[in-house]
Image (cartoon, rainbow, N blue to C red):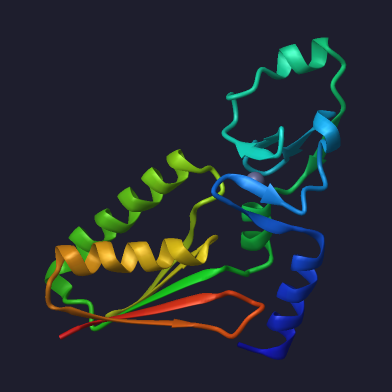
Length: 177
Ligand SMILES: [Zn+2]
């Protein structure tokens, strides 16, 4: 990781920490239950210390009550917009015959993770021949995805490494033999 990236991550962390278990830490929005933040990119809503799916809160009702709305980028969109991530999964020697199935598994996993917590997302899947790189908004998400792939395709070997604190970027490598 370049020192520029590390500095950028450090800077990001000074103004927000991604939600853990759906609860934002260092919460700077809606203090004491006043007001909400609305992500201008994905429509996630920060309300009562949690990021929620769009439509889980009635905007009409909030408008009616005169609730202050701050327009912002949520932590997940903010990571993606800056080319950053917290979890990285490297798949190596992906067998061409399994490409389609693995792609489907990753996308399905991403959909379920996001449905469970709107801030848990797959940011990107980049494929270069037999080497794939999947980035996620949360480090444990990359680990869980790797284990899921390993369970489904027993011939993959799993290596998990974590960058040194305080950056908390989880890097997982899966090699297909
Ligand atoms: Zn967003």
